[in-house]
Amino acid sequence: MLLLLAGAAMIYLGFSGSDVEESTSVSGEPPTEIWQDASLQDLPGEPEEDGVQAMSGEAAAPVDPAQTPSNPTPEPDSLDEVEALEATLPTQDPSTAPRFELVGVSADPVQLASILLDAWILRDPTTLGAYVNGEEGGALTPARREMVAAFWQAMVGKRESAAGTLTDLEGQQGVTSSELSLLAQAAEVPSARSLVVTRARRGALERSMQMILLEEDSSRALEEGRLPHAAVGFSNLIHAELEAPWPAHVEALKGWSSSLRQAQESHRLSKSGNWPGIEVVVRGGETLTHVRKRALAEQEGMFVCTGLIARVNQVKGYIHPNDRLRVPTTLPNVLVDLSARLVVYRHGEEAVLCFPCGIGREGKDTPLGVFQVGDKVEEPIWYQPNGPPIPFGSPENALGDRWIEWRQDGVKTSYGFHGTNDPNGVGSRVSRGCIRLRNEDVKELFELLPMGAEVVIQP
Image (cartoon, rainbow, N blue to C red; front, side):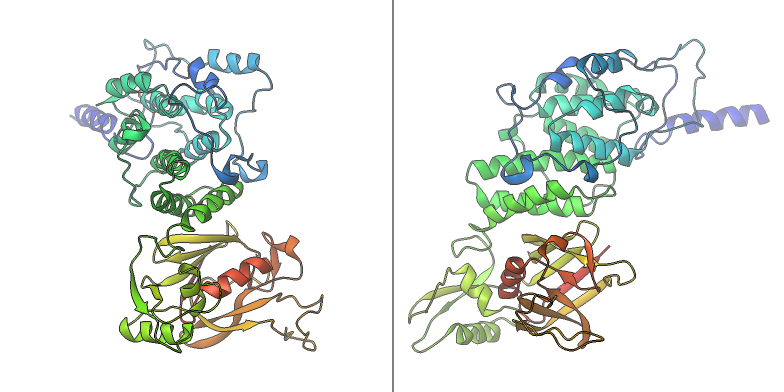
């Protein structure tokens, strides 16, 4: 009886978990070579008719190796070594394998997801091929390995091959239904994809696949002049990267931020953009301050500053009676991601502009939490904690051109956004806890961010 119960338990465990983030290998199915030469050969520069498009803006620039995950398998130095990696796929004799493998190694899903995204950012699948066909990739289920290879082939234009693999994978263990859904989207003609973006996806690999589809879709929209679509796409892409379980791809974020700015100049930062707002007709003798006060009286709970009204309406100097100005009703706010060293200026949950930043040095860490914008000071004096005040313009004034104070529950803090007297420190741990921006960036943020706006600091 005990033996029968144990056998039943093993059978149940062997078939359960087919929709987990990373399944264990199914023995009795020796892996087959699925990382074919097309996956390694079809790179940008020789795309098929519907192949990969170059990333827009700065995103096409090579990623700093320091920002990419460590590669568990040494990267090949030559094409011969790449071919050797393909030829040495781990195999197992099915006659000697146990029916169920309940205990054993499993591939790290976060590592696989990050390597896949790296391959797309760099437009180079060499490391991905080495991983999938190497020792660590041998811990992947055969279905998972085939799915990853098919996804890459679909993204570089081999959609018919990917569609065939998708059909073969349906109903198999080792891949989730969400992953197969993303593979199905990749196998469609790019212009016909109905890309659904959700932040509810659970798995790291699902996130990576969705981000690759989103980057391709957003870049294509930018090239085609569909700027509102591109703006929302790059906003979602940046948020997905900041929420990911792997180290931030700083250089990729830089490129995506550049593309975001280009798109938002004709969307959230344009009078003709399709965004929620109210229209105010200028009366005789009014300034932007009067317009702002009337807008605030009309829309309860709104935060807006004259700089934002001027920016979205392209006001360069004076306003005139009967001018029709649009005022955004979506609340401006800021998200600061310390690990990515990135300040994200947003309207609601949509990223509008991104700025690189410096953060608190060790022992003077930038505090986490939710703050509100307090006083905003142009050409600030730096009141040192243990020293005389340093006037604006002094080379020793660490605050640079602007100061934007943070408050917490209405109480002033000693923290805020400010400029710098050393732009080389932006991107590093250099401050006493404040967020340090380049002077041109803090000036732009100063004009757009109203008092009372929320500031969220996350790790």
